[in-house]
Every structure is written in C-alpha cells, then in structure tokens.
Length: 68
Image 1 (cartoon, rainbow, N blue to C red):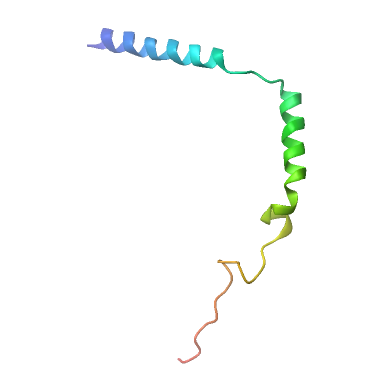
Image 2 (cartoon, rainbow, N blue to C red):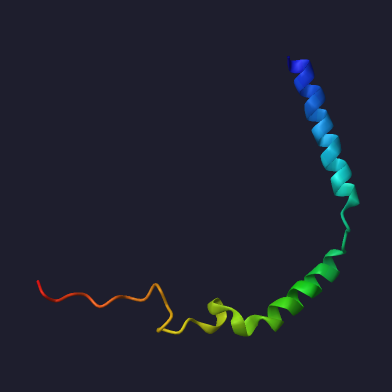
C-alpha cells in the first residue's frame, strides 16, 4: 500500500514540476517595477490610503438608543 502511495505521490510531484517549468518566469526587478507602477496608478482608489467616507463606512459607530 505504501509503495503505491509513493509512486502516485512522485507522479504528482513530477506533474507539479512540469507545470512549474511551463510558467513564464519574470525577473524580480521587473516584477517589482510593475507592482510599484500598479500601486501608484491605483493609490487614489485604495481606502487604506485615502480613507473611507463616513456615509459608506459600514464599520462606523451606530447611534445608540438612549431609551434606557
């Protein structure tokens, strides 16, 4: 039983290696430049940088009932 498991496990490893070999590789410096450019282009839409308007903020404090 363990022999068949190891063969099937090795087949899966080889399959993953073949899939990885087919991927298009990009240099880290090029990927970092692209990522930085993407971040700068989309910074105006990032709520962590611009904040969230209070009228659409779902996590704002709700008015508390002062009946009690």
